Length: 376
Image 1 (cartoon, rainbow, N blue to C red):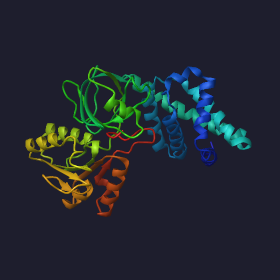
Image 2: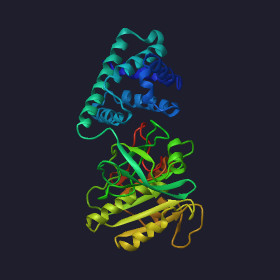
Image 3: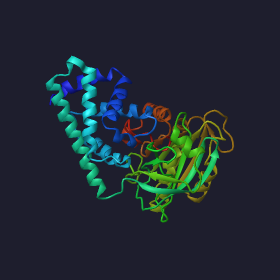
Image 4: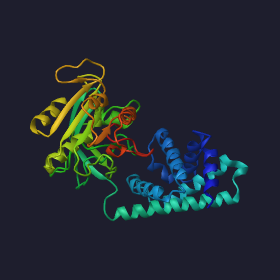
């Protein structure tokens, strides 16, 4: 297998942009119509994920230690779409046909053999990971919404009860699907540590153009059904015993509520400093609960921040990261960051400018196929 040839050919194909996934899915559905039901009705977002996943696979094809875990995750994750081993050949045929179409005379027998071998390895790793996972966990967990609290026009806090035990670690994320938007899964991070009764809280904000978030905030109610995927992500989970600084933007607060639960249960004396950011005081949808937690736990400090209003009523002015840095320097603590992509990017930049050790800064790094937990 010529790795350089694979990468160069993919760069040539990817240069055609949106034409590539459009041609691929058209080919797949025409030649294998039975797989159409595995995909959402609207394919707009799915097309971007295909290109992103293929780009990631090809770019790491010579770094097996990085590629294999990614493929294993894809294989396990695709179980929730009811993907079976017999679906992989159909996808492979459509992929090879797509590559041949866009490469034209550059699609040589040697290149076809390289891509056939590469896809064969990808399919093998994914299907083996799926088979292993099937022995331990279901492809998804059916659940019922037991409460739905509309905190703001664009924010809801809902409590969900899985029908089977669903184990996860605080800081991990779960994919969520509503029957009102079939085959569209979005990642959200539980806002509580696992409870004896199994219920899970989710904080959901409407994302512009986001059909799942809009439906979960505006369209569902208590008693409605959901499906939950297996837990993913490790970067926001607690490690070691260092004190913790939590910098949250909007509903990025959710995983930190779960971490606070965990610290309370552990009773290890770990100190937690939460800097919760929002544009305005009104946008602090969970402020009352946060202040109650701070009153109940002497090891927890909660500092609400507003970026578009003056400081008042115990709320400090500025972005959450700037307020956190004023309280710093945080050279010995673990710093966790969660919020919108723009908020996370800006926060990481500011932390780096102030010399915080990268090894102490933790942020979930989802792939292009996984929306960031807590904000989707």
